[in-house]
Image (cartoon, helix red, strand yellow):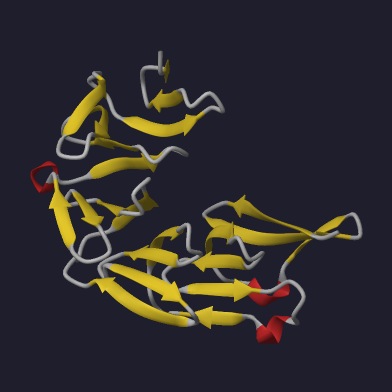
Amino acid sequence: TVFWAMARQKDRAQLMEFRDKVWRPVPRFAGMKIRDLFRSRDEQLWVLLDANGIVAVNPADPPEKWVHHREGLNITAFHEDAKGRIWCGTWGRGVWRFEQGAWTRMLDNEDAVITAVRTDGQAHLWVATNAHGLWEYDGAAWVNHLKEEGTINFLETTSDGRVFISSQSVCSLRIWKGKAWEVAVDTPTMFGCLADAPDRKVWAGNILNGLYVEP
């Protein structure tokens, strides 16, 4: 069995491999700045590089067969939807979708940094930005939400498809109700993490005010 993990040393994250009871750097990524590591449902590993695209890794293949996608693109967010499609948010280049071996630029009029990408219970795509609020894509058209608030610091969806956000200018924790945003937790500070338990109660972490649990 081989394990991969990210290890941070000073200002650089390095990809490490655990093999034969020893941790070693993965040679293929030596000297590269690693932003994140993901596994998709088809057991494909994805290594997100800092400002240089993403590498698809099939552990069964030799390193020379690993495919480097979108070289030079600064990918800042990654998401796999229920259909197995890969969505990547970028810095200044909108949103890209990877499907059936091809990349398509899906949101081409956004020049901000994409901070998060998620899908809800209706298979709508939600995209948070650091300057222009939030985008919603229903499969046909893009709708911009909360542009006047600028930075959406936090975006997350639950296993039952609910959408939660927290912004820098308004703070609190809000939930999408289909036509408007409703305050779920009213606080003067932002939220930074959220998860739902098996009983579907939501647990939300505030950056300065502890942990909130849905009644």
